[in-house]
Image 1 (cartoon, rainbow, N blue to C red):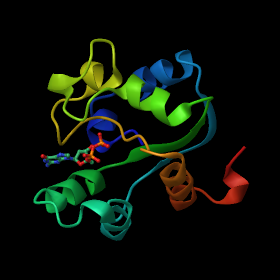
Image 2: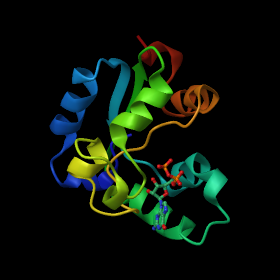
Image 3: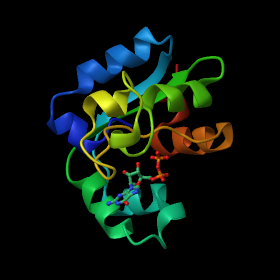
Length: 131
Ligand code: GDP
């Protein structure tokens, strides 16, 4: 996902350029907005964390871009491309270093395993939307 902060700040094009330039193929993509129910379900793993309410407020406050990306070693390579959760700790040239503003508003989400990538892909897309 390209998160609401990055959409608000006009970074959709810049982020997609970094992604495709790094060799990822976009196999599904949409411009959409999460409901509170969507965000609570997507981030259910964090529901006991103190920032859960803030996270849901943030992720629902405006539109996002969701996408499924394909590449060899995609999960690990995408995590490297986006950088650390906190942009202050992210390596130079990473998407979060370039486009994120804080640990909360960090521009992009990337799946953390192949298993979660499959679950998250099915959360956002019907089979007929995946190419
Ligand atoms: P990620 O896998 O790098 O996205 O990081 P996590 O799974 O640890 O956290 C999920 C998301 O929760 C992050 O991308 C942030 O948007 C948000 N988040 C993480 N830590 C904090 C925090 O301390 N405060 C707030 N408000 N949000 C946070």
